[in-house]
Length: 167
Image 1 (cartoon, rainbow, N blue to C red):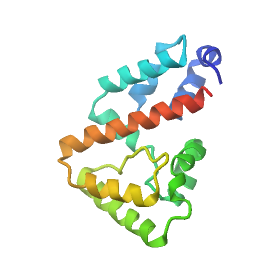
Image 2 (image 1 turned 90 degrees about the vertical axis):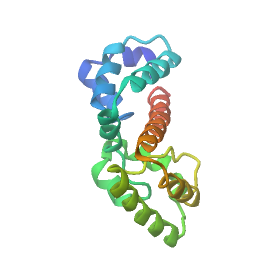
Image 3 (image 1 turned 45 degrees about the vertical axis):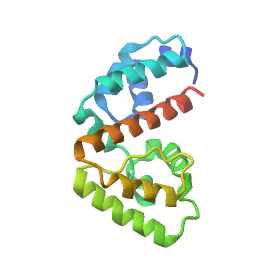
């Protein structure tokens, strides 16, 4: 899809397109009503501005639309509309050692228990071992700091998906 096609989408179709990029209803609605856009750069700037104005509830709503890192079953069942993108983003899980995958699953659960939402990381280009190290490091964060780190990671993921949408 290109910018002109995005601008011409119906409200419902634009909503569906933006929902593939971010699971926050607030972000999606504001992106839909921010059209028309002149360029990909404007789309990305608008996305950044809207995301910065979102609150913790919006962040957590967006997080809830992601599979847990390495959770292939979750990818298959719950996230069919973003499955191709999410699996590509988690490419580092391919061929990962079973023990690393199991440790990731265990630490993901501990993270979710501690913070109340799943571990969010822009996984593109990261191996399973790297993601596990990031998860372990972030488990030490204060909840007020961690929500902002996770929101920043969500924003990176959203921008990657916007670029894929408009490729």
